[in-house]
Length: 101
Image 1: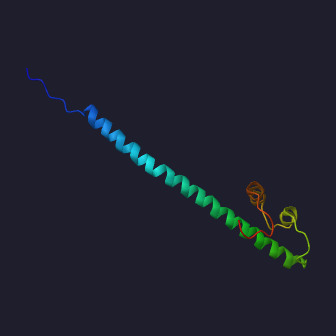
Image 2: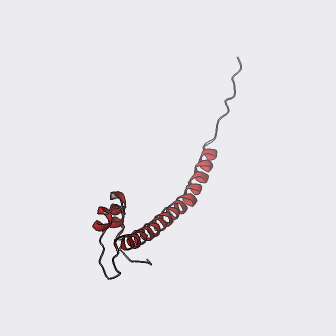
Image 3: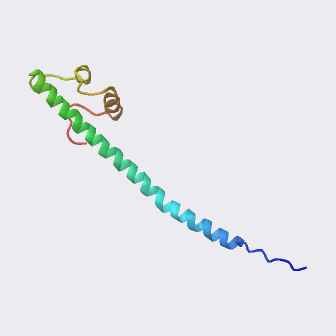
């Protein structure tokens, strides 16, 4: 009776494949982390711009001058900012009137 020869991967071939996969992971993971950090910064800048825009709209709608102090609570009560926006602003430490980070 003839024995069938079984085709299989050798240990060396498997080690090479695992090595290549680990190299690819080492290349990809730092780039993903950088992109995530970049996205967070862009989101923070956009939220700061939104905050400043809503403050200006509040001032125009309520006829208040630049010297008047406006709080996040004022903007929330008047419907200029949502609860989620307020939470994110507080979490990120954003401030009314701040322009650069």
